[in-house]
Length: 206
Image (cartoon, rainbow, N blue to C red; front, side, top):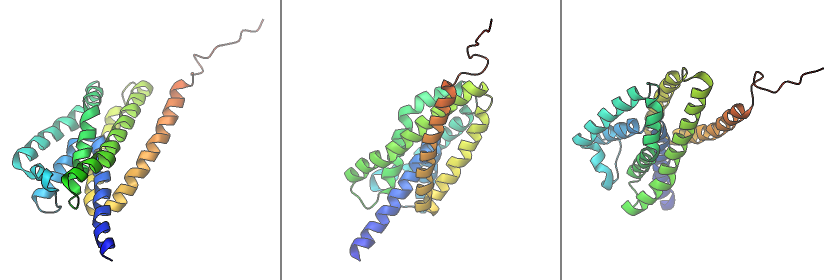
């Protein structure tokens, strides 16, 4: 029974970390801001090494960054620049988010596990998102990108809220979505490799 009581909180914390990190793959600063606010209000406990996330300076920086990221992602070309710049930022954000949830572990253990489950989740979602966005730009000349961006905003917001309320469900959904992204990437890659009828070679009959 004692082992169960010790493992159950850790499982919930890991689940919350995965869900938040996956959301960071969509929007780096929205989950950071939400986690900082939740920690500030006492809704969640932050690991001792990450209590700075609930400080006023951190919340101000996160808030400004959220506005810049949300608006910039709606502007053609700028969205691709952001994707490049955030290639390393989002995995770092995912690591911080996952590690900040692991209050039952030592700081070193939390950091290593944060990299394993948080950094990898955020990095995968970001790379998949960037490739899908590139495919959208090629197929629709970028016209669909703002709409896709809004969908990502909503998904990041709902996913972040769910990570605090129903972490196991949120993590399950995040893992399922990541699997679906793999399938979507494969489909987009096949679509881009398939020549259109207008460009296919024609056989001239005598």
